[in-house]
Image 1: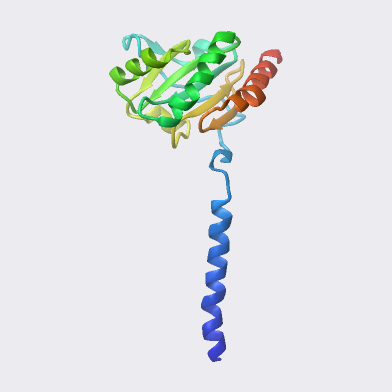
Image 2: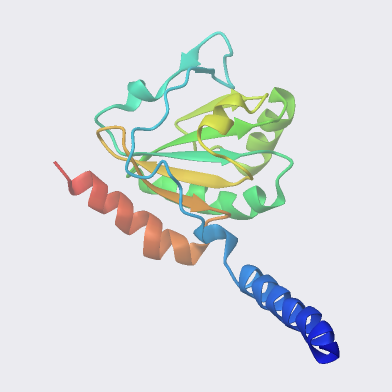
Length: 178
């Protein structure tokens, strides 16, 4: 009986360590989004360049487009930004910049410094629309097809490898669909 008293905490400890190790080995960028395969949530947000003008996803219906969620305070967003500048030069997709929980002045300064690859930039200063998209960190990028359906969600910064192996091939595939 005495051995069981000492054995049970040891077994519980080993199980706890195994669960922790399994959780730490998961890639946080592989979190499945419940929005993939569903229509992109509707929003109407002010444009960064002219807050009196609103943008909504219906304006791009019939086009393949990307929704890139970023912020000037985000280090990873700065790292991925050259990829969007490069993608914009190829002119194969509309990229909507979604400035998240930021000030307009800081967002504008950031774009002046790093370049503006976006067809349009909207602002979500309170993060309410970001909540509808399930955003829990920036950057995140949604790939939306011609019918307005989210086809892929990329969590974290897009690298050159991602750009060439995921982003561009997926855009070409979505553009080819009827």
